[in-house]
Amino acid sequence: MKVYICQVIFSFLAVSVFCEENCNIPESELSKIDHVLRHMEKPIYSEEQFASDNEECTNLLNGIHAQLRRLTQRYKLMNKGYVKVEEYQRMADNYEKQLKTLNDELVELQQHTSEKASATIAKLKEDIKKLDEEVGTLHEKLKGIKQDFEKVKRDLCVTYLNSNQMSKAKAKLKEMASTYLIEIVQQQLNKSNANIMPMLEFSAAIPDLDDMGEAYKEIYKFLEEQKRLEGEDSVLLEATVLKMNASLKEGSNITDERRTQIEGLLKDLATKSTIVFSTWTKELKKINDAVVIKNALDHMFVSQMKVFGALVGDTSDFGSIRNFVKLTIVCNNYYKVAAYKELIDRKIGNALGTIMFDLLTLEVNEMKFDPHVPDEIPKLFEATLSSLPNSLTELRTCLGKVQIYNKKTNKCVVATGNDFDVHKDKLGDFYRVVVADYGCTSFRLEASGDKASVRIVTPSGNPMSNVNLHLEGNSLHNYVATPKSNKPDRTPSSSDEWILDANYNNDTIKIESQFSDYKTKKTEVDHLLVRDINHLPHVLVARYGFMGLKNSDAKDTIEWNLKCGS
Image (tube, rainbow, N blue to C red; front, side):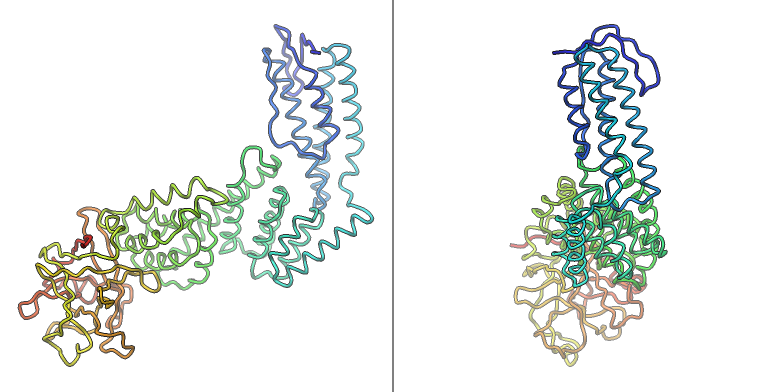
């Protein structure tokens, strides 16, 4: 049976609207309203849309559905045991207003319906009256056996938390009502106020999204009271809330009010985190707070990595960027690709080789199942990898066999396996490395132990090394050699860690060393180059950073081409 409406007044718009044609509304719509009023404890999260040929009637029915959605969500929040008295009073007042609005709309609808439909609407009004009478009791806590049982579950959950059994505590969350939830969060924060990570992990496991949002709100309040919103804690809280927010979809089981609160919280935290990132960027030059920054990197969300990476890249300071990369490559968080993308976009050449080696270790399949942004991360990974210069990406398939050519001389590097003709007493533990027109050595490129540099290793397993010994009569250049054996007491000291500084302009690479045994400035880099010794072109290192390179008579040989060998 259908209800015919000739004229309706939109009370929720506070204006009169007149129908120019009849509107057919199925009785099923009234049944839906009746069902919702009988089950207010079941919140509605998605919008219920009614469609008809009459726009005014369509808007009226959709307005009623929207009111019902807001009422059920309000009912849910009011029934939470952790709601404060003042907040409850505000909710109750708002709830009563919404009930009145819905009642007025139904009265208006009743005036323009058939007798049978009018009787149905009258019954709906009775349901509203009952709900109105129950408003004052919604905030009461559970009584009797049910309340005692909830306390037992609460105490068991707290016991697990106190004994560092987080997995069991999170499992118990699924059995608990929200009554004591915020109480647990508050107690644990006050107990271990030096570390909020356990409560962030605990809160992220809360099954009800409104309760989860309330827990984050409580953690923010705690940090604010402790004056700890200007450091690492704000970054960690923002990361956790960002992950929650990224997981929310249209129709997720969360009330509109809580969504709005989450958005406001994130806006505030974003401002604070950016300030923290700026401070850390300055500190990276001396890396005083490495542990704090490393811990934060392990938990940051993709958008935070992007902001932090951009700030570091904009400094153009070698020390800051180098230390940032050193921390990022060892963090167990693939969202770091967003930071890498920022450095690559800024063409920070000395970071690119290290970044490529780290990218190649990441599991792309794992990214496809990311719980928060599964569509975004794999695409970002591919975009980041493809943004690297050709001089690096062309090596991806042949890292086990790479030949190194000097761009200036067009000769290739040869690890000879021959003794030095000079300094025989001091270089007895090393073989010389030269450049030649033939006999090119196919090196294996691999990440160093700390992943911050690259090792250039011969087929026999000996790494090309910067030796702490300068040429006779020339203190501006070090010898480069391969060790005969891996003796711990080998002299002089040496370093087999290199930085691949890639160039976008001509696909060349500068091979640099941060070996510091002979330097006072630890952040300086020395360049691999070619220079004759007794009329034989040797591979050497220009000492003392850019100042030493400037004074070198071989400074025009620092560019190299790395090619796949046979």
